[in-house]
Length: 580
Image 1 (cartoon, rainbow, N blue to C red):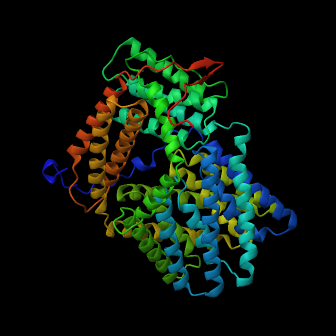
Image 2: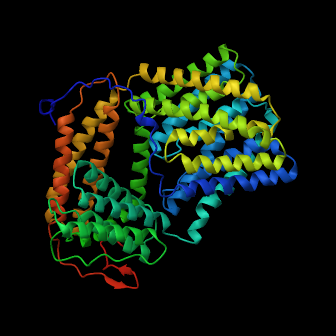
Image 3: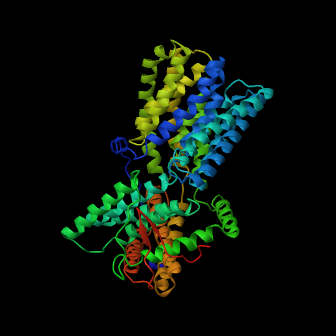
């Protein structure tokens, strides 16, 4: 792709919104899962320590309990591995902080280590795309531990408490697999069906992108789910149906009826009954590639099991953190912003600069516009949360059990509210973080409130200042690479029209993945300041061409294949290439 083909436009710094970032959205359809999980994972160790009279150790068990917030969108096989990594990363960060705290009391050193840990945690979470809550929980725990009194001989026992609580969190999050093994896959497929229905009812760029992203996420969830089961086979057919059930220009009552039927399939898929079965695919037309997709998913699953593919994935992860990575500027922002916030608060005599470090670390998103939005949300939520803390503090000091119950309540409330807007969740997070200090010993309420307000304001100012000063000119380069990858994937999808079903399906999924990456790269670059020109028109043209290719290839009939047999709400597809 030559530079001459690009019609660049130098981006102008966008005005920073004040109201839009604070509007409430619709809650996540699974908000209750992390909320209930963190309560269950926290209640077991906290009530145990309450019975033993050692609530002063809650900070160490809470580090492991908070791992229950991760991985709720993943299939259970992948979730188990992810949570293991999160628990180990949490323990490693906490161990580094505790050892540092036991060796030095220098505020300058502690702030430097806290900023470095925050930057490493941010880069690691972005590279692995672990999803919410990302690095914030890891940074909260490690930064708080840096300023907690500690002796070197206590570190092994405290880390053992973290690992024990992490094991409880692992069991809480993975245990539901014994009851509903394919629950995450069903929810992912239901979202794909609902997105396809929205696209069919209201065709346009926004719904087309949303449908492509939802279908891509559903395929990835099924690929990561492990051994195929009859239920997963049925879910694969439903995703293929959602991907194909997108006529390019049809209108009228038939389209509305089809959209309603897709929504009905989504509701049944999300429920607890048998997985619904879509209409059998015709020999050609809009649903003519379902067999190809089913062939392709088996071939791709076999490829993913190849040890060479896994080694290549690990090398790609390391390259994503290399010198030319677009993630590095964000990590540098985190390092500078956290250090600046910590040193500024220390210079003003604040006794707990780690709050400023955590505030700054929590701001950094994919670009500066999103970072500004998070700055507003975090500041408003923390200031309102301080008022809630002041109101609930007398109740929490009545008995130790009341303190434990208050922390559990705010942990649940935070996860229940944060999916509507980050600031609303912060209203619950702030009193919970302040109440944690009460487990060691009561502190003067005025001191806690004053320090938290000052740390919030200074941390937000220092954090956003670092984001504005550290440019991310690599974001435009990521767009250009994504454009090249999309053009290549579209060409391969068109060439694969006459290939075996597995190749056709794999090429279409690769094109969908490249379109999702292109949109993510373009959105990220559009929110950055002080960068190179963006090929906005070419991005739009590439997306339109890619979606036309997906629609065209979805309508081409594939080789004749025996239709899968249907029985009692599940399907058993014909033998697939690469299944063995």
